[in-house]
Image (tube, rainbow, N blue to C red; front, top):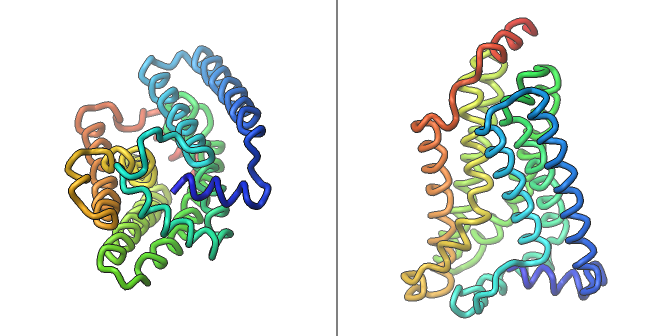
Length: 272
């Protein structure tokens, strides 16, 4: 899938082999700047180690996802992961609808940059107005990312193969779940139900970004080698979201994502 994107970009002259180290260097520099700003801000607000771990995880996930989407990160032979089947469908989609792919990547990366700031308790508690403005931009980016991704789901649903239709249903189910949590979280914020708002937003992020690592990890499991390529990809699509949701709910149950602090709730009430 990623190889197909890179090949098409190279054919159009948009991605040259010599530009990859430079782009990775720029990404590393930006990451270092953002991480330094986070650390300085954490020291200023005296936030706990849990916030630092959460922010570091967000930065790492964003960098991994960006590098994976732009340049590829899999060294495993494509035949083992059934990527030959995936690349065929994905390359066809990119050639027919390149605008949807570019728009989806733009919006999903923008949302990936902003969401760690929304989850960061120390940053959020400083200014409710800033939290609300950034949240609206991040939420709109996520919604637009799902809208553009829906074209890929429809592309699979239009295929004659049953496996491709099941794959399309998997993408469609994830899109609907993300949009539902986005709407529910927004309405909860309007009602000043801060706990429900935060839970819906975290669930939305877990659903949307669970596809980045888990779909590839599932495809690498030995049982998938006994499935035809189309069905292996369909199973990976369907299983990636439940794992992301399980980790999110486990974080809620274990207390790793506690309820918002009283200062945040007080600021929300004062702004009403």
